[in-house]
Image 1 (cartoon, rainbow, N blue to C red):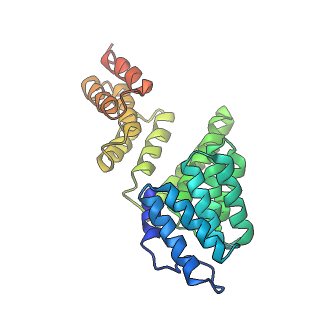
Image 2 (image 1 turned 120 degrees about the vertical axis):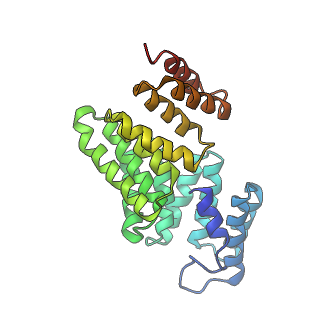
Length: 254
């Protein structure tokens, strides 16, 4: 779940996104507070809020999912997955729970299982942009693992990213993923255009600047490529890929 999504949840009315069955108003309030704390970076208070919500209603899926988000942000993938799994067991039609479980599985390298959960989320809510972009990444990962046989999966991944942009045209990570897919297809001009758009939308995205550097280098635009890698290094001084990209950019004309 992105911080933008968390900020959206934090701004919702207390009972928004909660089950239709009766929910104690304090449980709903604590869930809202929990997501507000997450959006503000206070994971300790967020955990307390979600746990407090469960004291009012132990089977509240959104509170379990909230604890999963806290665990995921602490890079506790096993703990996050367990919470998300419990959330979707309690509420099989909880789209965000399936989406968060899919993302955690993808982060753990379990792309096949992630794809299943992400498709379940989209079957419930086709407009979940995070779920659709993670589905594209799951397809991409599976496709890259299969060599030539994986090309149809890369094509499917591109289609999913384009679906994301139908609902969020200015979503920088989607443009960045399109840039990567174009680069993999040796479409250097297409990669440059998508990476450039991504960096226009999020100038502080080091990964986007790195992709732009690589695409410009392939096009022989060495000075522009070097400048993009310099921006990458300024954003992430310890990222070896930026240093390597700059070295390649400096000799790209040769």
